[in-house]
Length: 305
Image 1 (tube, one colour):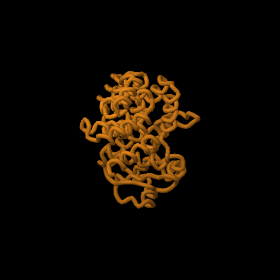
Image 2: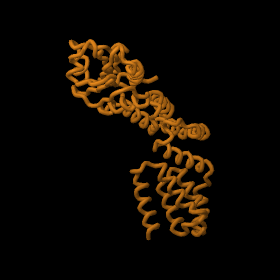
Image 3: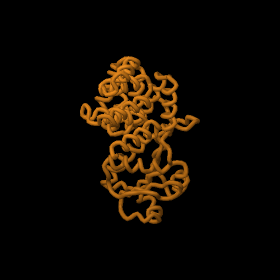
Image 4: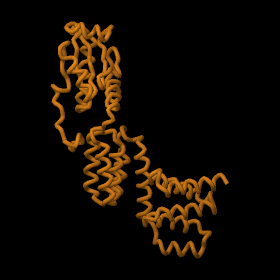
């Protein structure tokens, strides 16, 4: 499994560093000063507190899952009444989170694991850090663009292993399959999507790319189709087939032009196939791609003319 931490590749903190007990003498160092590096969660508890016995271990488990992005400090209020008084702890369990020396979030009472994860996610978002995953995604994209498909796949897979909710990484693996002409494998990955990534916008884009790749595998000869359209400009099927051949040849802009012309001539042909194909192509490309921006404007002008 790859590591995507700081450039210095610092080792993950040991459990003893992630979770510790504190006292009035060490509270400043353990919480206030430490929170200038990473958010620190403070659990106020007592041995006689029933809900504390449930919350404490559950919170510790989520902190360990965060892999060093947060730390946890435990305060026994019976032994540290001055700290509890200064922070106006009225009941236990009470949890505060500190970042940059200040309390930034908190809650009272036991919470389900799902809420504890959301709590920790909010804290890690404050730091603006994701463990280097964004940089790793950029590197994987560069590898794929440069043709190093196997390396790109390995990097996307490692990112997904680190973050199973990362839709961009999962979609990246599918795009690598497409780049290797492994259409069946790509289709299987999309048919068995994990729930965590099913709604990611990148998944919609790669579905469109797979559909176009399957069409490309069946596309007719470009030059023959160009000749057919030139001989009979009103032949909608020939123009549609030409658009597919053009996209398969990497000429997305020309494919869009042909589909727009087909839509202009007969927008209802084959149950609106021209518009549907345009939507598929737009979905497969980046939203800011000039082909998409120009094509959408032209399509809209035709629809609302």
